[in-house]
Image (cartoon, rainbow, N blue to C red; front, side, top):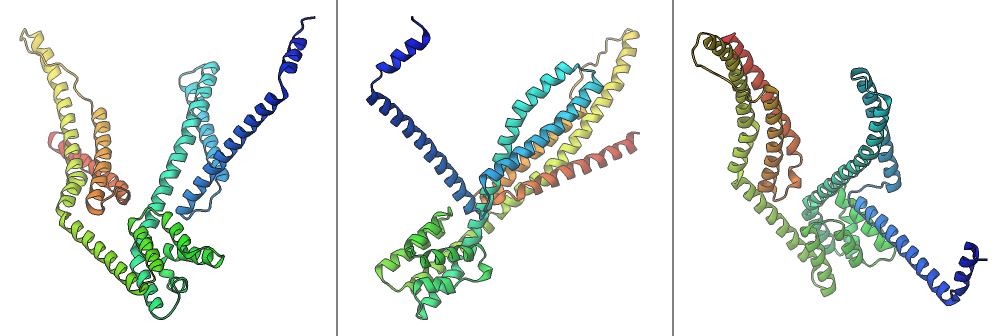
Length: 367
């Protein structure tokens, strides 16, 4: 009998045992590779969070984001069901189809957006920690040099140079000290500490310290010179920032003061032209009835459309202006993130205030 069972049995019997073993080996190898890739991915995320000083489980974080997305979708779904059923009288079939689309696409987009926002926040926190380390690094190196000159070993000099005011750097040096006490080489522990921060100053300082240790020179004098060089570099950066202050003032004035003022006056002008067009429309109708060939037509831009355009333009202008100012003053964009909400808030408030005052003055003069 040529049944499916017999055919399958003949095919399996025809397979040699060596091929079966090879097949299972390949399958096991692929499973192991996937497992290792997942472990490496989790380790990278863990190291990334450690650079920001965060001790958060990624699984717990995923559950939190999942719950936020669920609650948000429930709230939006309830509102849409009530709004469309009451206002437009849409059938339940359309409502169910809309909910399916909402829960498939919006849910995924919301999870994706939450992860992006989280990574941006973590990246900014890492950048802030790097700035904090660079700020106190010269003082720490000078204290370490003093301890070395007093006769301490390098690891003890690093440990006893820790002060509470050093903040992030103090915690990092404590980690280095614990690793060295557990048997890790000092050079390896310092390199691991420097690799956690994308700081050229820190990496060069640690590299010079390790080279000094290997060469066996005067480590105290070396650390003092490194600290002085870092302070001189900071002084040069402050001087360069002061030299470009004129450009910063000009960009700030144009973004925060001039642009909202001009947009507000333009909005009032749009309203005046619209009212004038309405008045002239009745005049042209009367002239046409009298046989005078006078026409005035055209709708132009509405007040609501111009207000949307003005708000969007102010937000985009404030965003890029804050980024430009940060690049001019600090040499990077991340330092100017704090300026973005300030610029956007002030420009929008000034736009609304000037627009309201101009509209009231216009009503007093032409009312």
